[in-house]
Image (cartoon, rainbow over all chains, first blue to last red; front, side, top):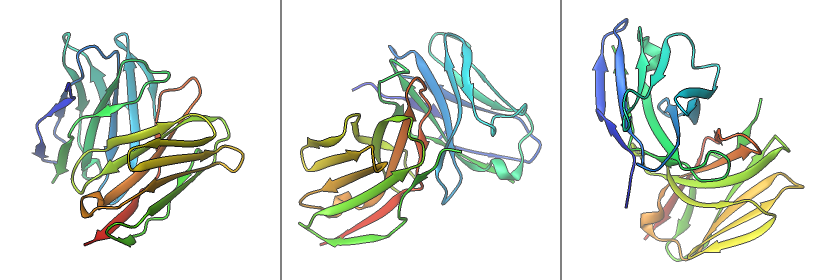
Length: 114
Length: 111
């Protein structure tokens, strides 16, 4: 069964450093998402991406964040200058149709900012 | 601000019992409703979705939706210890694809 994959599974970085989290969505899916979950808190939407551009973003997704689909398979989330409060699980999700289809989540990347 | 509320639990049930998980949402424009299961340290895993008022059954799981009361529930019949997890309710607006999650209800099924 096709699945969303994410790398790395765990990333440790120093405050102020840049990190890139990588995702490979399900191959025939067209809509891609990043969510995050701070430990003990709810899953929060960050950004959605369709047709090579951001379709929606939350207030969390400020200028420190960017997304890119550099090739036909990868979907990346970059955090330019990490803060302690960026420590969280970051989940990538994809769906074939943004309107009605369900979103399937990758296994997540645990980001720890020291 | 859209809100999705769930009792954080834990909800403890014995093996074989019915577990009932509840969720309320604030936005009357919400059109699609999802239940995800999340094991500790893992990603959300879709259990089922419901769009229309009433009940929807899938194996041991039944989702119930009442849009007038802005209420969604999930029943798990014949609960198993492997069902022990946090259950996340998520809603989506018509015309949007963003999921708004509740904080989740922890379910503990004892052998």
